Length: 280
Image 1 (cartoon, rainbow, N blue to C red):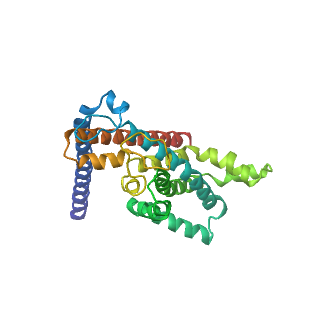
Image 2: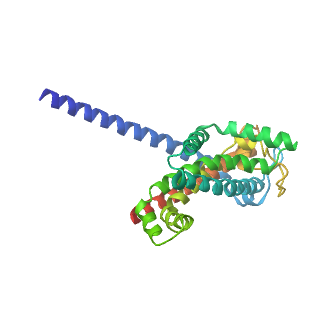
Image 3: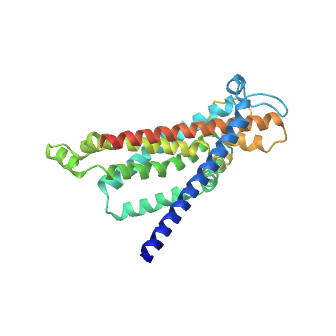
């Protein structure tokens, strides 16, 4: 009886501590979101989306920064996603137990946990120093290196969840391996693979360090990928540290926009994952 009472006490204690930890985490998250909404909503107006970043002490918008972030994020995603899908496909379909897959998986795990500033410094040394100037190309490559490990991991995991019976059934009908992978495995793992791409985009959306060392910033609207390009993370970094109230307000507004974008992407990824689970 004494042992039962002790176990029940420990169980209830751990339950209370678990609830306290969950409530504390939610409180901090809601506090951050509440602060962003409170400080950022006041700056939302038409000028934010129609005017470029202003000179010191003036009002303006972040159109050029929004454009630059979208362009470099799309370029990085377009560059990193196909490579990640191909690498994940090899690891799951062709070389599950080979030494090459073990090495690639180990390197991929290092990239997943590597600080983004390290990626930025690497691209700075390889591209910016070589080219002699900052550019949106370098920024996109830095973001692609951050997208790559997320896509590799999710692609491999999703393909490994596809039952081997589906592969065997397709092979029994005389389908070549490439057709089995593209028509059977990819279709079965499609929702999970798309979820991985969305999570990768959400990860790179607010990265400041890689862009600070590669794309830098541009006060004006620029469509030249071979020149510095404005982007939201660096604008937030610079404007938040400035003494000008107009710049500080734009920094809060830009932070709110990035946060809402990341939340929407995560909600979309969760919805796709839930849909895939129900189908299975």
